[in-house]
Image 1 (cartoon, rainbow, N blue to C red):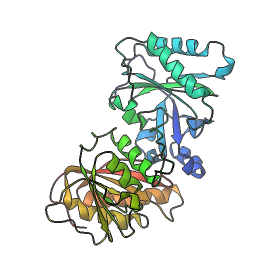
Image 2 (cartoon, one colour):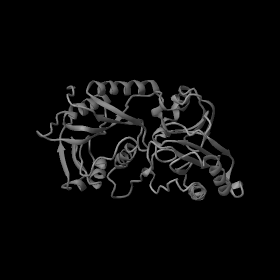
Image 3 (cartoon, one colour):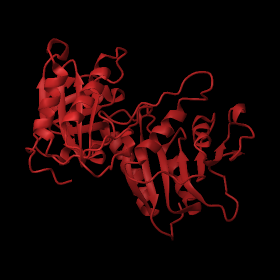
Image 4 (cartoon, helix red, strand yellow):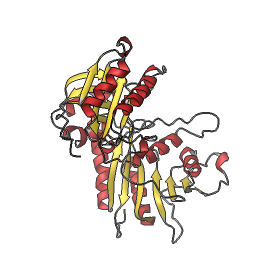
Length: 366
């Protein structure tokens, strides 16, 4: 993205590191050559970085849930500032009104906080600031309606003050300030938390590709107990779910579902079968699981995609995680499957979600 001429070159960035990687925070920030470090909110770090490539193009990028160049900051304690919303909105209009952004989105620095004060403050600030901005700025009701390749003014507000910057959603690694949206799945009807994981993965994929078409056929490996299966069926997709363990009985005889009780390593689709998507959340050895995915990409339509959870049992540091990811990427390249993105989702534990696309015919056997 070409930065609007009215904005200065940023030297400070706001990055978010998932709490799962709390023990690796220092190593991640060292790898980014980050100076002037200050922790903000929950998992956010205000750092000084001279080279943006360190944020978006290094091996440490996948450990960053979200990132933003800081073009404007107001360190303060908002409850103590009389007329904070009006003063902040006026400042945003002066600094960014002519920056050519597609919209303004404001969020809290601590989105998981139980109190709603900063969530309400963020909403009020966005509403007031949009009144002051040019009419050309769209009022986006759903953050996913943003163009992932057009710059957005992202702002985060919390007990430490207000931090703002301009960047495309794709470069920031999410449509929402701080990353992808939190998808709640709980209660007696939820089969497992994995349903929220695939829902978030589909949401994230919109940064790079259109959503899978209506009635797309998914092949799901390691489907039991069926949390992801249920989410996909609810969205109107067809699912072939493969696992040695049975799915939750609530899914039995669901329209659009074919349940295969067997090993993914020996599963063979019927002749002529084609899938638009392959989803794999299998536990155990990551390379072994990915080899089964690659074997089955023969049945994936050209342009079809793979969502793969890179499990890391026994991996305990950044170097080992990088090595495992590199091996999976080598396997994909040898089989004609192109990587799209890699990220850490809200519902990921010590694992990453990788996205791939089938780019042509003549795939090699694994």
